[in-house]
Length: 352
Ligand SMILES: [Zn+2]
Ligand SMILES: [Zn+2]
Image (cartoon, rainbow, N blue to C red; front, top):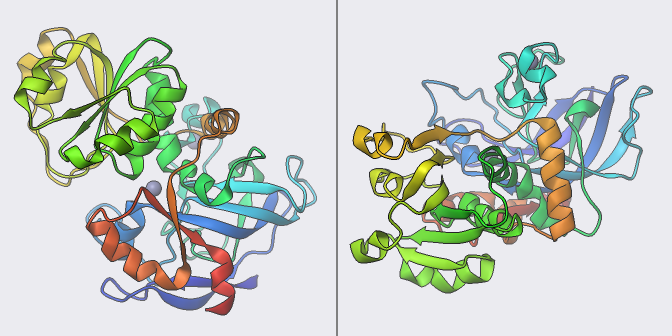
């Protein structure tokens, strides 16, 4: 084991503060990375504050962070894909059983025995996994991704969660050139959905409650912007969408969007409202429309997404902060006061 500097929370009401954690020394197939940037995902805040108590109670100290970009520091003797100095990335999953049908299909996100990047039982140390708000991490090479050259690394970090969470359902539901795609909610996830759907060649319509976001939506790649509170504007798009990506985490009426789908159209939820959503059956019956959810993506698809973003020069719009501002950033996240993702410059941890 070796010592690593991190920012951790000691309890559900404690602010994140500097601490020292232990990491395992890299074994045969492990990659040790010096972390350069880590994006702040809303899940980090939920986990730190123990807001998912009923499904994933938080074990303290908690080191969050699953949008990790870093430089390979050393590798185990069996590592083939990486060498010291490479720029690499780690997302939401750091291990799985590798033998179940999901793993064999490259869909590790559905493995019943996966290990999440933080606050999950750690097979190696016996404690819990610690995430990317840290100067270093050790991960099996199967779960480490290659970052294409030419991408801004601060902006590339959020691709590991926000990027793959939007890329995966867009691909799964066949979004290609000429398809009409809606994106509901223009936050961390939504803004990535717009960029990726646009790069896939779709006609992208952004739905927003705030007319102020119109110019930004167009700049990000939207072809049209609809203010969702306007019944008249919504009516114009009735039964016309092939696919709608719903990235809203607050309570909202999804029936209004289901009616905008054409025959066999699909609406996929990637946000996670805390209360159950009401769904009118007739909206689904007419037009054989469907409603789905989708979490992150598997390792092969995450690499495909990174390569796609490299080819199309796509990164998240980020506000880069030093780790010392992370508590302030959490408060701002609650007010949606960020365009569109915070990315922590981990060099700041050296002086913490
Ligand atoms: Zn996330
Ligand atoms: Zn598995």
